[in-house]
Length: 309
Image 1 (cartoon, rainbow, N blue to C red):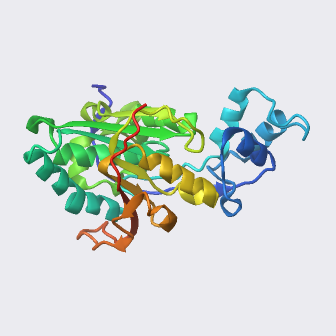
Image 2: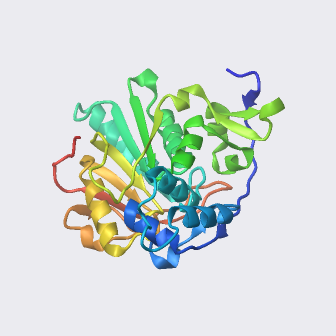
Image 3: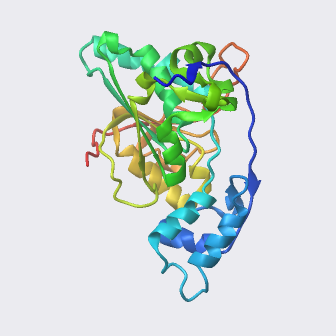
């Protein structure tokens, strides 16, 4: 362990900016970034100039747009992708896991109806806060000492955010959403040259892995099945037809009775013929200073066909 890391204590804050360029539309067509018009262009601060440069460089004129080096397009996608996220976002989802899903898994394992390996996919994971939040929660409720094995898989379109996620290091301001007991157990606070940062402990980093994946392009380079898939706050950026296709694809990667958690604004009633609705409903807020309720869209597999690639 680095001598510049110690156990963590918390703070908070973030900003974002908006920018739009016609080049984004060409990038959308060629790389599958199917962003709805009313959500176009929400990007991280300071990337406006990078987008202008990329748009002019990659898409210099209408007749040659889309013919540039694929690596250039990846760099542009890194600029235009929305990367807003934080630890334990929408706490109602994690309360549902603790109150409903986890007891089901434990009871099934005790009855010999399932094994003790839990596989989770955090789709559109950005800089990894969701994936690590899931890993912290799972390691707490399903410890290795009791024979459980945890595997958390995070994917995103942006290579830039995945590189950051893989380090398991974030600004210390990010820590505010993490329950205190998890801060003490799973996060280190930097000092000296690492001051102002937090880092996931080795136990946490060992159960999380990351890979680039575009949800709008098949086939998915993913090995299923998964007991749980989180795909939150990304479908709102897709056209309706694309939303349905993505949800259908994700559903095929669930175990029988596996769960798909969508964001609070992403209810998709037209997929109910393949996935049954556990929610939307409003779950009671857990008690505590960071508690708040939230409307969830939670789906569960109806059939037993599982995609294994």
